Amino acid sequence: MRSTLFRLASASAAAVASVSAALVTSAESSATSYDAIIVGAGVAGNVVAERLAASGAKTLLLERGPASTAKSGGKHFMTGWTYDDIKNAYERVESLNPGTTTPSGNGERYDYEPGAFGLFSSLLGSEGWSHVDAIEQPNEKHLAYSYPPQNVAAGEGIRAGPPHVYFSLALENENFSHQLNANVTRVIRNGGLVSGVEVENEDGSYSTIGLNEGGKVILTAGVFGTSRLLFNSGIGPIDQIETVANGTTGITVPARKDWIELPVGERIKDHPIVTLLVDTNSSDFTFFNNSALYLDTPNATNVDLYNNEASGVIAQSQQRILAWTSTTGSDNITRHIQLTIAGQQDAQLSVKVYLTHGLTSTGRIAVESNGTLSWAQEPWYNTEGDISAAVNFIDEFRGYLEKSDTLQLVPEQRNQSSRDLVLGGYGTGLHFAGSAVIGEDNDGRSVVDLDTKVWGTQNLFVADASFHADVPTGNIQAQVAIMAEHAATKIIGCKV
Ligand SMILES: Cc1cc2nc3c(=O)[nH]c(=O)nc-3n(C[C@H](O)[C@H](O)[C@H](O)COP(=O)(O)OP(=O)(O)OC[C@H]3O[C@@H](n4cnc5c(N)ncnc54)[C@H](O)[C@@H]3O)c2cc1C
Ligand SMILES: *[C@@H]1O[C@H](CO)[C@@H](O)[C@H](O)[C@H]1NC(C)=O
Ligand SMILES: *[C@@H]1O[C@H](CO)[C@@H](O)[C@H](O)[C@H]1NC(C)=O
Ligand SMILES: *[C@@H]1O[C@H](CO)[C@@H](O)[C@H](O)[C@H]1NC(C)=O
Ligand SMILES: *[C@@H]1O[C@H](CO)[C@@H](O)[C@H](O)[C@H]1NC(C)=O
Ligand SMILES: *[C@@H]1O[C@H](CO)[C@@H](O)[C@H](O)[C@H]1NC(C)=O
Ligand SMILES: *[C@@H]1O[C@H](CO)[C@@H](O)[C@H](O)[C@H]1NC(C)=O
Ligand SMILES: *[C@@H]1O[C@H](CO)[C@@H](O)[C@H](O)[C@H]1NC(C)=O
Ligand SMILES: *[C@@H]1O[C@H](CO)[C@@H](O)[C@H](O)[C@H]1NC(C)=O
Ligand SMILES: *[C@@H]1O[C@H](CO)[C@@H](O)[C@H](O)[C@H]1NC(C)=O
Image (cartoon, rainbow, N blue to C red; front, side, top):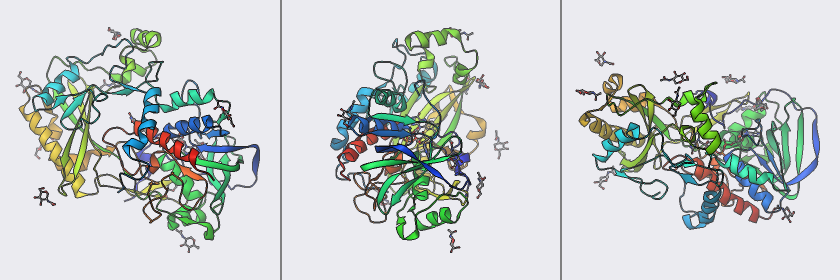
């Protein structure tokens, strides 16, 4: 059944906006041209733009949105993408945007002990799980729990990601420029050679921005945005390109002889989440309402702590304990599980159960004639192996709760089978990947080559979560940044 993607991922930075029905009549050419145009200023886009500018390329970063910060089934060990290959990329991200389990600048943890951390560390500890530091012991992902790791900006101590740290760095570079409210509609190409991009401006006018000779366009518009740009540019499954060409968006699709047939949008993965609600009668737990931090008149003590020394409860995220383990499905394939635990209301906590690395379900998107993207197949729990793995884990976890004196599932959930909890209750993890998968050969299973260059083109690249062939064990953002760092090295090294 089709459901619109927008509804499912409405909070997503990569949420898909439909392409307008306006016809492109006169697109004005911008006077300036660039060595590198990066489309989409999200996690990957900021990393790649900073790297390209520092390499000496005259770089333009385009973003359809307004300013976001105060300043503004794959193969696993492909040549050039092993752990050793990406180590430098990891180290650069780590140096600029490190992780910490004490995000509060003064090193204190707020509302932790006894609290949710205390309750669940004793529950899991009594079942043989170990307390680890997820940053110091990244490979401990079986029967392990940790204080939640957060990314902070090096030197500033505030919680932040690549759109803050990399953008700040890029702004200092004479070779870097950027434009907000610049909604790219397609890349302009002649056969395999891309000459620029077409942009819909805030006032509804269109312009084209050109590349210098030897220049490159890098798509970092997110898993959905990048797919749409590829479809609009005549790259993807033939039926998707045909739908755009036949449709009402007014996009100028290349002539059919120039269509490049590639499996864009066909192998999308995400972490599905099942939320378990757990009642407690322990006086150790006091509900802290994280949402109330963002009210019009927030608690002044907390605001001052944060503004003056990047400390206090605002410096933290809402989760109080994270945990990981692995479990096997009916197909004997091992899947990882991540748990994130937070307060839900008075005397109640939420335990989010993510099915992660090892999952086998994939989804497929389709473009509608009006440019809206929808699921042709949703990417969650469509294999029995995934379902049974999650059911096995939830059965085990319920066993823990049954032995607990202080914690138990809410009555509505206690009443349901684990299978019903999984199939009736999952939602998106918003950790999408895999709409333009990387591969060694143009064998119909991949969209980009080992330099992240789109097959059949000379100078079009994809550097965001789209090219990831798989989902990670934990949350995905750090991996998107690291892979974008590594992709930037490959792209800089690519002669057009
Ligand atoms: C609500 C939410 C919470 C999340 N929480 C976490 C978390 O706690 N930890 C974690 O690790 N991950 C989290 N994620 C996932 C993480 O944000 C994404 O995996 C990551 O942002 C993907 O990076 P990207 O560069 O591929 O795409 P994005 O960061 O989505 O960047 C794409 C950018 O391209 C722009 N764009 C799209 N189309 C166009 C166009 N046509 N023209 C111009 N610009 C365009 C978009 O506006 C956007 O800025 C969360 C995601 C969501 C939605
Ligand atoms: C991007 O452009 C499309 C039309 O091409 C429009 O529907 C959408 O709202 C625009 N998005 C933004 C953020 O301007
Ligand atoms: C900008 O690019 C030029 C080459 O075009 C290069 O010499 C210079 O070092 C670059 N500047 C920065 C700050 O990276
Ligand atoms: C597009 O239009 C052509 C010609 O009318 C038609 O043959 C084809 O089936 C259409 N394809 C799609 C996907 O709508
Ligand atoms: C504000 O926060 C401080 C520190 O967390 C706390 O001691 C105080 O009780 C809070 N005040 C209100 C009105 O919630
Ligand atoms: C799963 O693995 C076990 C032991 O390794 C083996 O006995 C069993 O046959 C396997 N089952 C499947 C479905 O492959
Ligand atoms: C948390 O605070 C928000 C904002 O005031 C409020 O809307 C919400 O109902 C509160 N949640 C609970 C469980 O009290
Ligand atoms: C596009 O069409 C789909 C149905 O095919 C519809 O659900 C959606 O609302 C339409 N979007 C717009 C912006 O018209
Ligand atoms: C709460 O405490 C009572 C007795 O102290 C116990 O019987 C009951 O099971 C506990 N309830 C929960 C939700 O753990
Ligand atoms: C649990 O299931 C029984 C039998 O189906 C039903 O009567 C009861 O109302 C359910 N309780 C809850 C809390 O859902």
